[in-house]
Amino acid sequence: MAPEYWFRPKRWGYGAVPVTWQGWAATVVYAAVALVATLGYGAAVAVASTGPAIAATALWLGFLLIWTLAFLGLARARTDGDWTWRGGNDDTGPAPPRDDVSEAGDGSEEEHGR
Image 1: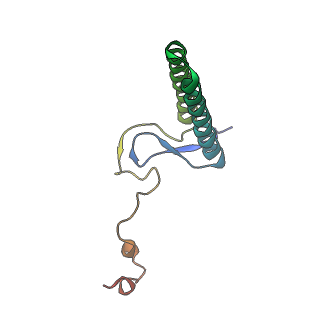
Image 2 (image 1 turned 60 degrees about the vertical axis):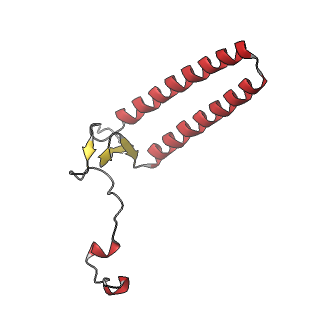
Image 3 (image 1 turned 90 degrees about the vertical axis):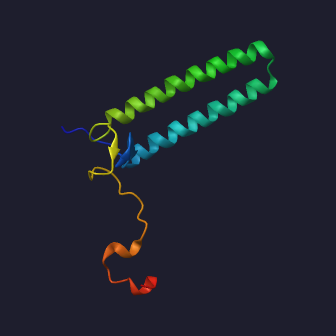
């Protein structure tokens, strides 16, 4: 049974982008949990004195570190290809935004004032 990939290597830079609903769901869950943890940390620090604030900061940073490493491990395990720096020379990921849409060769140069 072939592995099911949720992410694809980025065309520019380092890392991967989600390409399936599972990849997008994992990304949204990661961001939501990190946001809730940050809001909880902010609330805890707002009512705490110096000692508990330092403990809350350490707990928050430790949680975010572990949570981020877990998400990166999942993303890397579910990526179709390796994570390496890409300068856009290969066609392994999403295309970068185009500066001029008239380059498509669809004869629309006249529509763009050319």
